Length: 244
Image (cartoon, rainbow, N blue to C red; front, side):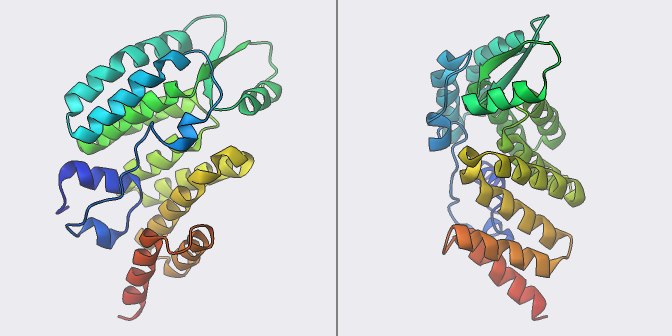
C-alpha cells in the first residue's frame, strides 16, 4: 500500500475502496472504542474500564502502538480473569436485551455473568493493533477470543473478515461478513454496523469476481447511506472492470 502503514490499516478496517487504498488520500478514521454506539450502551461488570480502553484508542490514533497495547493490559487482564472464573460463564453484551435473550436461549443451568461490552472492545482494539503490525494470524487469534466473549456483537465478525481478506482468504471472509450481518439483523441497536458489513461483503465479492452481486450490494449500501463515498468508489471500479 502506498499510504502510511497506520492509515492504510485503518482504511482496510473500514473496508475502503481498493482504489482509495492505492491513493495518497487521507482515510476516514473509525475510532474503535469511541463510536457513538459504544458510548450509549448499558453497563455491565467492568464498565469502569471504559476510560482506559478509550485512552488506548486515542494512543493508537497517535501512532504509538506499543503504548496503546500497554494501556490495554489492565482491562484485558481484568476481563480475562472474569471470563475464566470457574462455576459460571462471563460474556460481554451491549444491551440488557441482548443479555436476556442469550440467557433465555442457553438455559442450561450454568449462570451467565454480564460483562461490559468494553471487554470486547479491548480485544478488538488489540486486534486492530495486530492488523496494523501486519500480524494478521495473530489478529485472527485475538478476534476469535473476542467473538467467544461477545457472541452477539457484530464488530469482531466484521473485523475477522478484514483479517481474512488480508490473508487472501476471501471465501472465509465472506462467511464472517455474512455472520456479522445476521447478528445485525437480530438487533436493531447494531444497525449502524450494517453498512460496514455490507461494504465488506461487496469488497469480498469483487475479490471473488462476482461483480453483479457486488454491484447490488454497494447499491444497497447507498440506499442506507446515500452518496457513501466508499460505495461510489467501488461502483466506479466495477464499471471500469466491466468495461474492459
